[in-house]
Length: 238
Image (tube, rainbow, N blue to C red; front, side, top):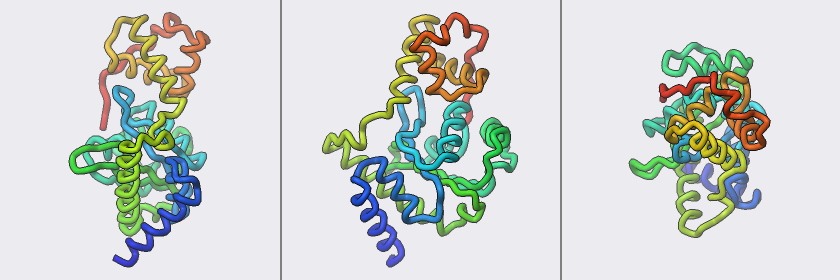
């Protein structure tokens, strides 16, 4: 109990010193746990999980790839409510072959932990932690990550009640993706799920992130009609 209390106090202190918003919360995870990257992901309608705050270059790359393939530890943790420690991002995993293939292709190594942000059966998003050391995914760190996830969930619920923009304002990237999806819906006359799947297929085909594809579509640098050879994929994995 003393260790949990100490972890809670250290996290709360780092959060306050950082400014008390969602970015500060993400940064605080690095102050209290032996990790080099962290991401707080929020589940958005049709888009699914999207990083609202990321710390660390590798963490940003991992989350970008996970968003494109719509599969991986965070997607599974969000769908099931179960924490997912992944000691080696390069080890073949039949549950998320696209995700592991992307990690291998990008030469990203290390360990990852995904913990759902949940209240009872309701799931808000996930907390993802990264480190080059496979030992990071050991049980003590997973337990500590679960405690931080509880604290983050409480902060998100409190922010919702208070209408705190520092926690509830979607990042620019997700706004662009929703806008681009709307353009795809209007142009192709498809439903929202197919529009987002189409954007993911296009991103994978072009080797771009979802936000890069969205920005190019919005700016007419990537006309939708010119990308119609990229078929929408209705198959998603958790």
